Amino acid sequence: MKYVRVGQSGLKITELTFGSALTIGTENLSIEYASSLIDKAWELGIRSFDLSNNYGDGKAEELVMQVLKKYPRQEYVISTKGSWPVGDTVYHMGLSRKHILWAFEESLKRMKVDYMDIYYAHRYYDDVPMEEIVRTFNYLIQTGKVRYWATSEWPVHALQNCLETCERLGLEKPILEQSFYSFAVEKVKTNGVKQFCEENGIGLLGFGTLAQGVLTGKYRNGIPKDSRIAKSEKIKYSKTINIYEQNKERIDKFLELCEEYSTDSTAVALQWSIKNKIYPVIGASKPEQLESCVLALEDNISEELWKKLEQVGD
Picture 1 (cartoon, rainbow, N blue to C red):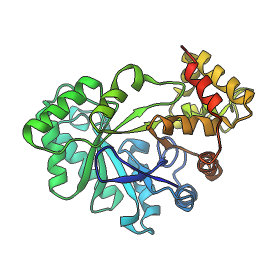
Picture 2 (cartoon, helix red, strand yellow):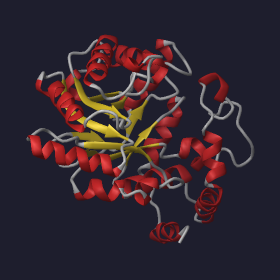
Picture 3 (tube, rainbow, N blue to C red):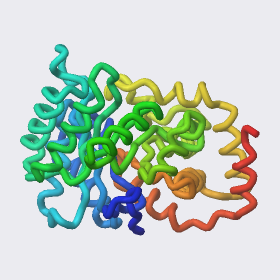
Picture 4 (cartoon, rainbow, N blue to C red):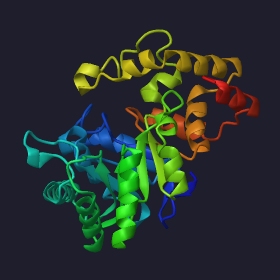
């Protein structure tokens, strides 16, 4: 497993990050299940793990760290997020100093760690002054409880304001933006986020690199009984089918080209993201899925196929 540098920071993470959304703590609450996935990820060389305080209502943070505690803390990067609504009142959401400091401390308690490698502003809220946001995340860095801070799904105008505010105040900038990204949905290219991050030395992670399984081709002959669509009611998530319906032409062409060139579509989807320097956050509900993703990074993909894919949608 290769390591890559995050933006212009000194931090390095593995090319693949293990993400726990909709699986550990949501699909399954057992420590045995969590161990089967985390231990496999570790065995495969993954050393970057992504969490959020809203994944499984905090259960993901608890379970993932129960497994990771047996590994040397300095040998992996752990991140979690705050600002997503986690309750019914105005105090349980957003980027106010009041909420972020509370949310962060609650995450530390659940995870039973002394510090976080990366702490995310999980979505942008325009009802909080940027100076308050920037000072709050820098305060967490100054306390030693956070090493770096980052953003997730922030629009360009907010990122621009953030960097300008950090520069004006002489404070640390976010090192990373995490966005929804795959061959199927390349909105970070069309909305300017990718270009902005590249021009300003901000790293990029992409979640949904396999379009939640759609780009693997497993839905071509119907809906598998153990798929995310089949389990949508159980995991309280129904957006996967929308990804296909809204991007059908592009997805179908992708799968046709992979078949034409006798190339594994999972390998193409993951390597497409890495070629674009948007490093994948991968989810998996089975250890063998993780293994197939890591092995897919070793597949040789013809330049001709890459060229054909570049032309899709032109």
